[in-house]
Length: 274
Image (cartoon, rainbow, N blue to C red; front, side, top):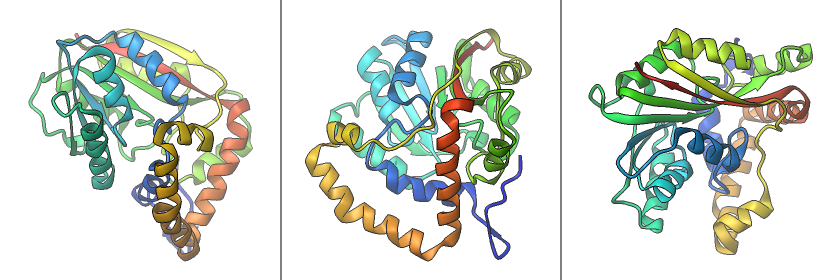
C-alpha cells in the first residue's frame, strides 16, 4: 500500500502525521481502534501478574502502561519514536505515582535497546498497520527481546474482505496507513514470525478512533481541557493553516472514519514464543 498525500511532489510522512496527532492526543488517551475497552480486553487475554516485566511498543501517552501497572502490578517499559510522547507519558506516570513500576524511553521497534529474552510479554496497539518497512522484521525484533514462553499481544485495525474500492483508495492516501489486515492475514503474519498457540478475538465492526470531548473532560478535567484549548489547539490550527498536506490528510482521515463503522473492525491477537 503506497501513500499518496502530496503537495507539489512532497509526501506527508508517517512521522509528520504523528507529530501532528501528538498535539491532538494531549486531549485524551486511548486513541486507537477500540479505545480503552479494547486495551482492557487485550490485557485480560494476556493475564499479567506482579512478577512480569512487559514491553509496551509504541507507548504513546502511556495510558496502556498505566493500566497494566495498576491492574496487575507488573513492571512496564514503554518505547515510542516521539520524544514528545515519551515526555508526556513520563509526566503521566509521575502524576499517578507509578514511577517505580513504569518507565519510558525513545526507541525504535526495528532496533530495540534491550537484551535478548528480557520481557515476559510484549504489547502493541495499532502498530503493524502504520509502520513503514517490513512488519515481519518488526515482529522478529519484539520476539527477540521476549523470554521463551512469553506472549506477544496486539490490537490491529482490520478491514472487511468485501470493503469498498472507495475505502481502499482512501487507505492508500493516508500517511499513517502502510498496509491493511484481515483477521486471517494478521494470524498468518504471527505464524510466519514463528509464534505458536495463537488466539484472537475479532471485532468486525468498530468505528475508527475519534476524539470525544465528553470523555476527555472526564479524563483530564476542566483544567486540562482549558489548557488544551489555550496552548495545544492554537498550534494545531497553525499547522493546518501552514501545511496543505496536513489539511488533505485530515480530510482523508475523516472520510475513513465515516466508512470505518461499516467496513472496518479490529483484532486482538496473542501468540507465544516457543
